[in-house]
Length: 219
Image (cartoon, rainbow, N blue to C red; front, side, top):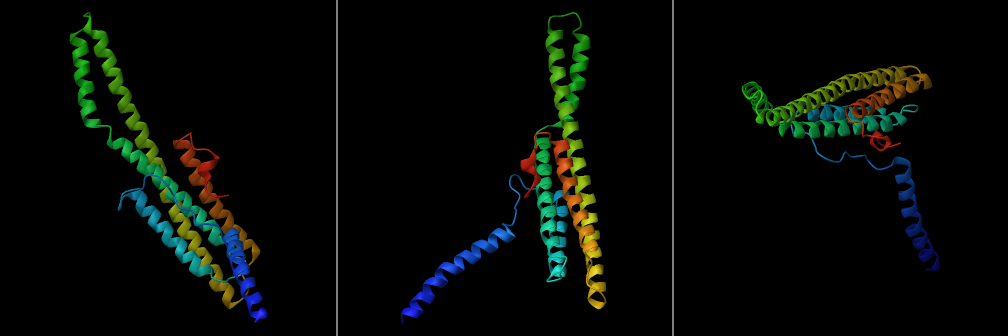
């Protein structure tokens, strides 16, 4: 009876420790926070494709020696894709608040009014109004260019990500029928995935200089 009680106590202590140890090794699944892209938008489509590649990579890797670390690298790529999509969503939200056609019409109207008011006390105020409108239009241009740069980087990342998935499948297929996958092959794919992640971080920093090391995903 005493032996059974001791075994039960050891089990209660050991199991939580094993779970915590596993969690430290695997780590939490990273999730993006903040504004999310609209369903069906380009950013959401790229993220969806990236998540599909991640699932396929995980299935392909399985228990293959030499490639298990790729699952974590692929997770980082998808994490950065989600962050980039969130930044695109923020830019889309900001752009939606700038009525570009109305501002362009107002800018033209102010140009006419300024010409007609030349030499009068109202000319200075009209000029200031036109400057404010021009600044808003310029902001819209910058935000649109930033969004387009992020989407282009997401597209390039996805195509390279899908290529890495296919290369991994090819390596493992060849390995299972002949030789085990080499460390060089694993290192090459790991380098590619790390390059994809770094590229997303860099373009996000370029379009938003306030992004620092904290925006680079998990270590």
